Structures are given as structure tokens and as C-alpha cells.
Image 1 (cartoon, protein in one colour):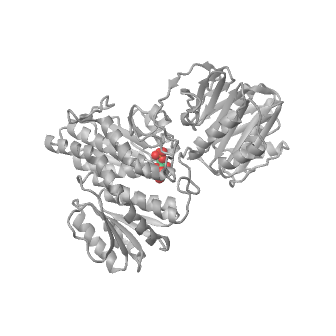
Image 2 (tube, rainbow, N blue to C red):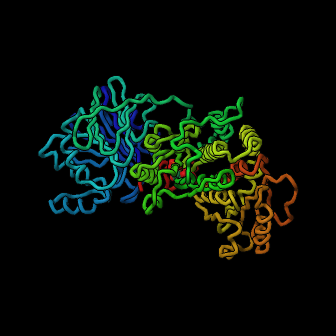
Image 3 (cartoon, rainbow, N blue to C red):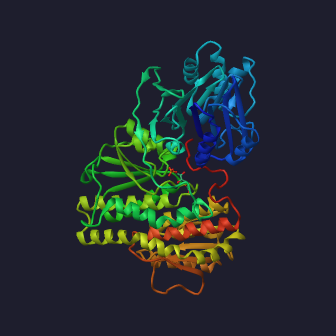
Length: 605
Ligand code: F6R
């Protein structure tokens, strides 16, 4: 992952670099660093941990210079310490890197046989030393091109040169890189969000491209070293997102703004006057679609799993779900009558982007469901359906998951109606329920106080289990994932009916077991599975939208969410699980917005 920034200006750049790094911290927060150029010297400052630490260092000892690069790291090669923090510099060159150099060990050996010494354990330092070597014979641009030819793997790079104090070179292969323009100042950044406070004029580098920035000019080159022109995009000036307001952290803000983001999403797609769905420009006529393949990672993958149940229930389309890191290496038989759908909040997840690329190479039609519409995945797909959730800063995905579910459900309803597979009455009813969804989410959030009480029961437990059937099975997976990543407690998500095939052995006296049991066709079966757990001493937390009071005495705690229909229950039942993970993590004093070892945007394999 990692985030990079570069600024060439006619005024000092360090403050703007720090501010942009703060916005890039969602990509990694293991260490941070900056290098600026002043009086023919590269001035490098680095720290382990957060950008805040780097800022303290700069307050004591400012980094001067009108040109500079910065980095936030998510460690891949080498532990997260100061030495391994970027930039990696020699006397002549300083480099920031996002990605992985796969042949770094071989290149390192080659350079060591020439007598060169490495300071860090990173793969990036080979780039610095290779460019430094080339600079003995060539100009910066040629030196970088020659170096890139030796690299295998993925990268977005920002490079400054002691003897060429006017320029920053940026290069992209695999990892994203944006260029921003302003008066007397130009920028390089891992995404447009990092540049937003400075400019809304952006170009995106494509794979293999390189750019040379000065304060007054930007030139682009393709991988054959030819000069090229790039399109400029004006990026939307959306919500005031970087402000937590009165919330303790971004995650609680994002959980509590779900009624608003859901409303925005529903309003974008539903024409309430016509009671119809506004989706057009299908890459394949819905009636002609043979099979849908939904692909994502982590939480996004869970949204695909939920959608599988919906599509199977409401359409006759064959449907397959895959994790992107698996999909990209499978021997898939592509078919032009299939639609391949990629779900991603960030639109930058490396595995998902690579899976999409494979589809493009096989000339099949692709659709992306993304939050960041300027992202690589959105730009590379044939058809984009945004989720309109607004920027999500907390590393654990919450409002984006709900947004993904809403868009997938809307897509399912639209396909079903265009294929003549849903009767008008049910279609109208489902749309009406969707319109009621934001209010029902708001009502569900009122459960917070009860959930806060429950959360205490998880702290001392040796683990916990989340069980559900049908579309509540992936919701159980999502609940367990949220608890794991936020509170570092072990949690397992399981199909309730599968417990007797092994996992029931885990149940012991007092083990917290969360049962997700909407009033759907599985309800009675789930109740039987609940009894199996109770009989073995499990401590049951039962979450349902069933209005009737059928909760048995053995249930430790029951939570009721509003009932809309058997499809939208998946969305409503997610909310208590988000709150549960949040409150357990709060009690454990965990870093809610930045859980350990993680990053928001996973731009490495
Ligand atoms: C978990 C979480 C991750 C992401 C996954 C995919 O809370 O956020 O599992 O869902 O890394 O990220 P995107 O959706 O950006 O492709």
C-alpha cells in the first residue's frame, strides 16, 4: 500500500506535504517521511508511526525547500522502523515508493557485488541505488527509464534529484498515481483526495507512464519514452469529509451517517415519482446476460456474497462469487455473454484491479461498484455504478458496505424487472421499502445503548462466533470481520447449519455466540441451530427483525431491528454488528480508525 506525495512550487512545500500525508494515512501508518531540496542538499526526515510524529520533528527542525516528496508506509519488506521508512535517499537521489519490487533480492545482490551498501531492509532502496548509478552517465529522465526497465513488480514512484533541483519525476506501474495542477505549483499523489485541498485539476497516469513535474510545467511519457498528452479531469468538490465533527472518531461518524448516505444512494437510483430505477447504458442487455460474476476483497467480497442470495431469489441469472486474489490466478473460462462485476470501496485494491484487468484482456464486459469514482477500477471498467457514500476514512468499512449492498440490490431489482422475472406489485413494494430504508437504519442506530452493554461480555471471552443462514451467513462473516479487525479478538463467522460438522466443538460454557436471525425462510432452522448452541453452554446474543416475542429464556440478550422485507433485513442486521465491534474496540482502547497492521487501501498483492 503506502501513500506518496510530491510538490514542486515557488514557495516552501513541507507544510502542504505533511497535510497531504495526513490524508494519505488511510493507505498506511507504520511510518512517515519527507525529503526536500534546499541549497543543493537533500534533507530527509523520517519517523516510525504516524504523520503526527513527523510533524513534531518538523516543528523542532523545519524542512525548507520549494520542492519535496513525502511518504506514509504500510510495511511489506522490513519492519516498520525509522531506517525502513521512506524516502530512501543517497546524496544525489531521494525516492518514495508505493508497491512491491519482486526482483529486489536479485537486484540487491547485483548492486552489492559492485560494492554498494544498503541501509534498509526495503525493496525500495534498490531503486534509489539503481537511479544513483545511472545518473553517473545519464540525465534524470533517462536514468529513471533505464532503472524502470530492470524492475519487476508494481510501483508508483516520486523521485527528486540533488543536481536537478527543479524537477520531480513520477512513474507508475500497477500502483495508482495522480498529477495535480495549480498556479506556480504542481503535484504528484497516490490519489486525488490527497491533492484536493490544493487543486481540483487532475490527470491520472496509466500503467507504464512517467511524468516530469516542475513548478510551471508537467510532461508525460509512455513506456516507449515518447512524449504524450493526458486528459485533465476536474474532480468533484463533494462533502466536507475530513471533519469528524462531534464524533470521537471517523468510524462512529461513518456508522451514524449511514441513514444519510443510504438516502443519498437510494435517491440517486430511485425515481420515486415513477417508482422505477434509474440505471441505463447496460454493457450487456440484461435479458441477454447468461451469468454474473461478482468479485471483491474483504468486506466488499461479503457484499457480493449477500447479493448472490438476492440474485438467485429474484432473477434466473446464474451467479458466481469470487475473492479477487483467487479470481486473478484461476484458469477462468471467460464468456462474452457474462457480466463481470467488481466491488470496491476505494477502487484501488490491487487484487480487484488485477482481476478486472484480466477480464479486459479477455474482452468481456465489466461493471464496477465503487465509492471513489475517480479510482483506477472505475476508470478501467465498462460501466460504473457509484455507491455515493462519500469518503470513508475509518479503515474498517461500514457505510461503504451498506452502499455496496444497496447498489447491488438495486441492480438485482432492475435486472429482474427488465428480464420480466418479478411481478410489478412486488417490484413496487420492494422499491417502496428501499425508500423507507434510511429511516429504518436510523431507528436501528437507537440500539446503541443496549449494544454498549453487550460489548462488555466480549472482552474476557476466548473468542466468539457469528452465525446466520442464507443471506445472514455473509452478514455473520462481516460481523466477525469487524470484531476481529477492530478489537483484535478472535471471531468466526459460520453458516448456522454447518456448526454440527465441526465448529460446534468450539462451543463451551459462556462463549459469546451472535445469532443473526431475520424472519425469513430460514428462521425456524436458525432457531433449531440456536438450541444446539444453547445446549452446549453458548451465551446467545440473538439479533432479529421478527416482531413476535419468540425469544427463549436461554437467550442472554435479544436485539430487534425494524422489519422491512426479507432482502433489506441484511442491511439492517449489519448495523448492530458494526456498533458491537465498535464498542468492544472502544472498551479495549484500540485505535478505532487505524487498527494495527492494516491500511484502508490495499494497493499491494
Ligand atoms: C474491512 C475492510 C476491508 C476492505 C477490503 C477491500 O473492514 O474494509 O476488508 O473491504 O480491503 O477494499 P476495497 O473495498 O477498497 O476494495
